[in-house]
Image (cartoon, rainbow, N blue to C red):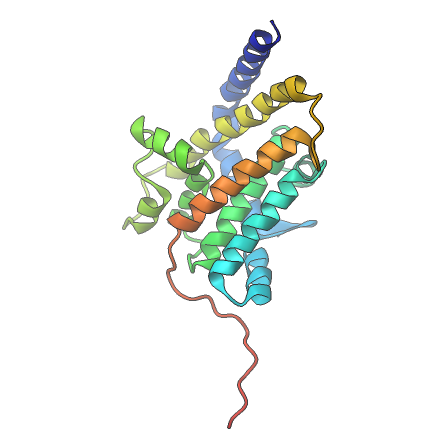
Length: 238
């Protein structure tokens, strides 16, 4: 029946995408992080997003929540993720909707890390950002399968240089689940098409839900390292 066929197509699409992903993954992972941290026309980088939210909220934790709310909203907005993926102009092309979703995930986590005082130029912080994109369940599963040495928090806390090729290894872990999430979601759309959904449709709702979970996870995994300065108005001398 329908559901069996859906499962088979999803599996086939996911498997094809996963087979293609490992080859390109290391480069794509680094490029996605660069784009998410530095931004590009039409997509402000993580530091800029963090600064805007901190200026508005004047409180780090409130800014962290507000960054997640923004990314959840963007993921649910009709057509936003796909358009964003097209704008990114990555030299190695993933499907636009996967690129867009990956960029939202990476920028959300990077902005939270920056708000908590972590240096986004540090390879260790970047690796932890990419690992956090897997979300809590993804990270726990990767650790249990010995594919990751630890959680984002543990990676942050480590000392010395990261093992050779670590970021590339993490990229290989992160891209297939994102790809499967998107291909699986498309198959799910076929089944749930008759249900009216607000906003970006079922796909957008699923994306928004994942971003919300990853945002909460990142908020726990990146503890406050130092307080980020905001330009406070100088206090008048008494």
